Structures are given as C-alpha cells and as structure tokens.
Length: 79
Image (tube, rainbow, N blue to C red; front, side, top):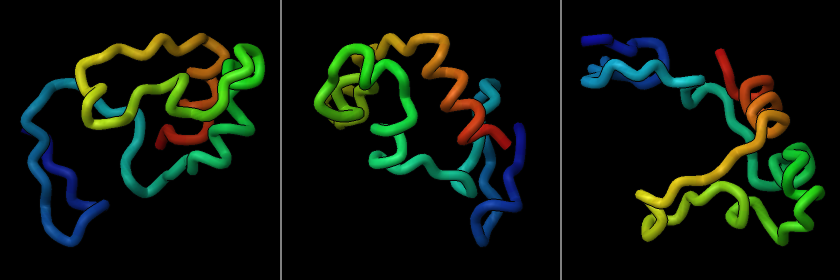
C-alpha cells in the first residue's frame, strides 16, 4: 500500500494500484481548461462539463478524451 505524505498534513494510504497522474498540488481551473482543451473549441462546447463528466450523477459515465486534450491535461497536471 502506497503512502502519500507530502500533500496533506497527515499520511494518506492509497489502497489501489492505479498511479494517479498528479496530486492536489497542481490544479487546472475550469476557466483555464475552457481555454486550453482543444476539443472544447473544436466541438464548439459550451463548457468543460460537456467534455469531461464531473458531476456526482455522472460518476460512472465515461468521458471520451481526445489525444490532444490528454496532452494538455498531462502537461498541466502531471507531477
């Protein structure tokens, strides 16, 4: 079990084997995502929620994220 000790005041034990792309030390705001994610302009989407489903009722609904959007997300959020 991995332990994360550099982000929160106390240790957090990660009970899963998936390695996250980043941690809470890096943030991409909705406003920045709206500007930086290519699919939003390409698909003429109204907001980020139309591209990446983040609402509670959409927890198990998959989002299709294009390669160029992944490039932006990794550049902005990976540690």
